[in-house]
Image (cartoon, rainbow, N blue to C red):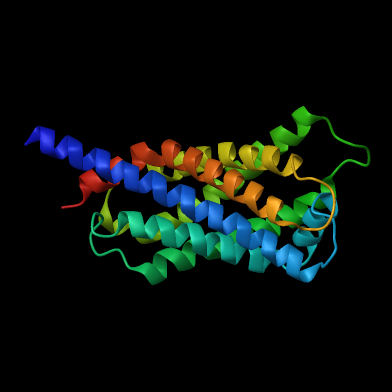
Length: 215
């Protein structure tokens, strides 16, 4: 009995890791496509990222949030009561869009000179933590009826996005200069999958607790 439960838990965590990796990979590529479609010929470095931050950042956030939210719902469905797709994805996408908007406002505080790599990574981690708090708290509004892992869910989601945003920043620094090309989509997939992997591993204790609380 215990062995079967252990195997079931292991299989579920594998499903969770796969869902987060694929969902975030697809979400980041969506964001890149938004940038490329709106800025034909723009360089996929600071100009494109700046445009995303001050232009359709809400759309990019909604796309990324919808992608990761749908993937996480797929992993949780059937294991966490009667978790419905619409509410879970809606709060995740809305929270992600809000986070993109906050990131746009924070970009106004960038120093005039080129910042050091340490400063950039520190800001990425702090921004990611802010994203994680918003997403974790928003998701818990839907999940709270299914378990008691509230603080753990919000805390691990915060940590996961802090680490994940750092991974994304490193990935963005590797983008080659020039117009958007397929190789950039490939880099987005790899960066997104890495971000999702970090998020999944960091949140796994809360996910296990949530499933254990579900009758």
